[in-house]
Length: 290
Image (cartoon, rainbow, N blue to C red; front, side, top):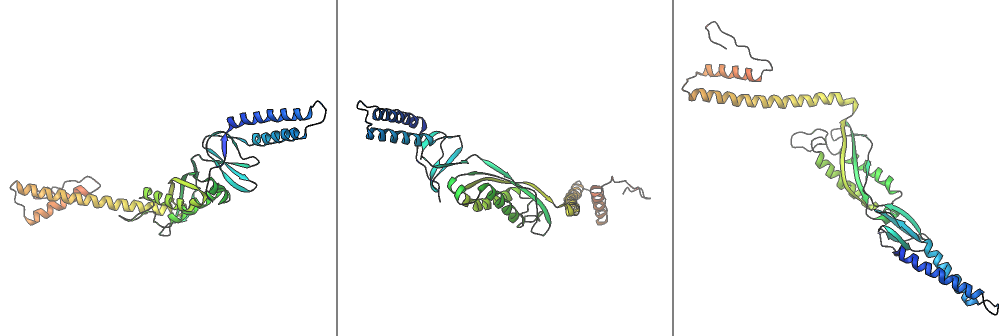
């Protein structure tokens, strides 16, 4: 089932026409009942009643539609169309009018506990920004589309969370390190799931991501260890570059260093640069400073 445009005319114009029909109906009814020979004119009476009945039916079909709101019309259980424009309209008489909002809406999921790709329990939540683009599908293809959006959103979030690790190695997509890519994938999967309900997913974004309480402390220590190792590696690489530069500079100044002296110089520089504490010079018995 797809959305289609319903029959509707300008409400103000229709109201003027219906008032004219009311006046004409009253006039015919009056002329039919009030005659010189006191014999009612059946034709005029029936015509007047018919005009009054038609005008009443169409006046009762007047409907006011707010901006970014639509009216879905059903006539004795049959879908006859949707009115999307805002304003006053006269439409199909005796039809049921259901209001469907066309405004941008959002759904905030609850914090869910799921297992990531490595089996670690994590807490994850997301916000989904959406709007209805097909009112017929939203009302007739699913039962209560807002509830459908909520359930499908949580299902999609769980599915995406199980496909990736919370923290991946270098070059590997992870939930924490690639939030943008994960959000885009979540939006695509949500669109596939919610198309049946006539809903367009504008954006899906993770709002909460953390290790579950029972393993949070252990995983924090793991993250700290990784950070320390990376920092140490960077410091060592920088220290080696500085040491090489120092030896090259001394050699370029004309100083001749033996293999043993170069080893001692390298050792002292590395210790001084890498150590967390300040290096303390030691004066040897021969007067040479280490």
